[in-house]
Structure formats: C-alpha cells, structure tokens
Image (tube, rainbow, N blue to C red; front, side, top):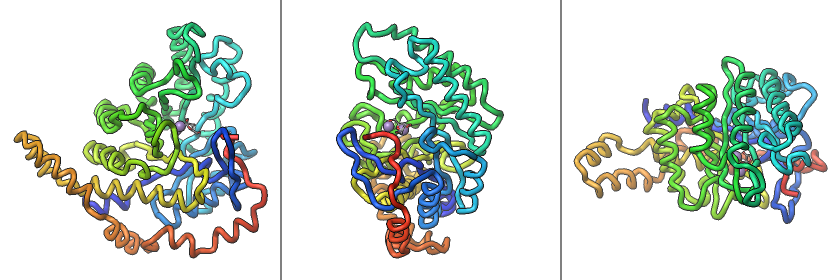
Length: 384
Ligand code: PSV
Ligand code: MN
Ligand code: MN
C-alpha cells in the first residue's frame, strides 16, 4: 500500500475526559464552554473528527461518563459521525480503594472492584465497544505494608473472572504504570508484568502502552517491537511527558520518540485498523484550549506516522544487512527530517477537508457557540 492510502486509513481515538476540565492536585483552572455531560463530550469529539478526518471514535471512562442509556449514547454518537470506543474502568476513586482495588487485602473490596469491571463489560455490550481498558492504581507505599506476591495472586484472580466474562469479539487491554499513586510497589508497574498476566489469560488479553508511564530514558519503541512480535500489543495511550505522567500533548515533548514508535508500528505492519491496535490519546489539557489541542495532537500522530511511512525500508535493510551503521541511521533520519506538512495538507484537500484543521476549527465559530450555550462545565473526574 502506498503512503497516502495508509494515511487515509489511519484511525486515532480521542478520550472523553480530555474535553472536560482537568488539572493537577494543586488547582483545576475551569475553561469556558467545556462539556456538561457525556453527550456534549461526544459533540466535541465529533468536531475533532470533522476537521482531521481520522478520529472517528471516542473512549469512555466509567463512572465519569455514566448515562442512563448507553445504547442511546451510542446512537447519538452515530448521528454525529463518530462511534464509542474503548470503555475505561475506574477502580481508583472510591474511599474503599485506599489499600487497593482488585489487590486489596479485604475480599469485600476486591469483590466490589471486580464487579465494577464486570459492569464495564455489560456497558460494552450496549455501546458495541470492543475494548475494556484496565488500569489499576493498586500498590503499596511502604515496605512490608502488604505481601507483594499475594497481591499478584489477587490480581490474577480478578483478571481471570473478567476475562471469562468477555464476549467473542471483546478484548481486555491491561495498562501498566511505573508508579503513582502508589510510591513503593505498584501491582502492574511495567510491560513485563502486564505481558505475563496477558499471556496467562489468553488471546483476548493484550497490553496497553501509555507513553507517559515509564521511567525517564525508557526505550518505548523496543517495547512496541517486542510486544508486536509476540502478538500482545493491544493499544496505545498517547501523550507526552517531561518528568512523570504529565499527560501533555503527544508529540510535544519528544516528536523523535513518537516517530521511532510509529516506525516500529509501520515495520510491524500494525497501522492498518485490521491489525487491531487501538491508537488512543490519554491527555489532559489543563491550561490550553481543549478542542484545538486535541486536533493538534491527532495531527502530531499523523505527522509522525507519515515520516515513519517515508522510511526507505529497502535501503534500511540493505544498510543493516551490510553492517553499515551510519547509512542505516541516515536512512531513518532522512525520513524523520522530511517536512511532511505539505503532503498532509494535500491529502486533506483530496479528502475534502480543510488543509489546516486547527485554523478551520477556529474559523468555524463552534467555540463561540459552546462558550455561551454551556454554563457550568464538567470536571473530568480527578485533579481537584
Ligand atoms: C492512569 O494514569 C491513566 O493513564 C489511565 O489510563 C487512566 O484510566 C487514565 O490515566 C485517566 O486518568
Ligand atoms: Mn493511560
Ligand atoms: Mn496516566
């Protein structure tokens, strides 16, 4: 397939919570016009798709996006030209979870947490979502606080129960994170732990790479290559980090890293939707305008992808096979250093889109409408 065909077929999922107010634990700065309910988040997600043409799904977070009728929400999304994507579970914001959710020493709390995950699968049945995304804040703060190995047993038991509840076309995506909110041990701290649990569970369990969830200097593209080779990469949560889990716009901190990640995706033939990798954003726009920031983020992924597609794979292979270190590196850098923006502007024109999606959004008057119509917008659910 040629480069433009591959780019036309690329799909990026935006997160419902990125449209809502968010902040740090120090302060949430409310913005004008933010959505007041999940329906309005979908309205905003539809704007991102309208101007980029490659963001046709929006991920939900339960309970932040709890509604009476999920089938109705799915139908509403459809009317706006988008669809509901992954369902993100939330077992980290209840008083009961102080010592953990599915790994809590108290069996009653573990039951409550597992029941929530099962409820998320019920919701997926109604939204038509394929993916259940699991992230656990579980861990300990002090040596000796709880038994590290027993917590793995509890985790495995909960995952098994949820796995067995999945429908034929549904998947479980297990996300890891190095630390935070737990500071001594985290029960799913890295890709190896997530991979081992997914392997034990079976083919419907896959690993999520959140790009912000690693130690500084971690080679994320290696993880991508390894998991793709093992058939265990399920999804990305894209964002940028300078220090920890910063949740800044993808491609803002390290566009070269994003290119290297997307090169491994192209190398692994995993860009096409049929390959089953969900390319999602997981970001918070605390100080910048949200919808244009999300449009910008989608474009950043698209630009990195275009550069990855430009890599001359034959020349790279030849240089690698002959041990020509400098030429191999030069092939990669040639692609990275190409300005792909004119090509992408042409692609959009060909698709009937505005060549400059951010400018088109600003010109549309949408923001003026929502800032007057929406009063008292929602907080995403954390960061107060
Ligand atoms: C945790 O830091 C995480 O990355 C998980 O994906 C959560 O579900 C998400 O952030 C939302 O805050
Ligand atoms: Mn995430
Ligand atoms: Mn995170």
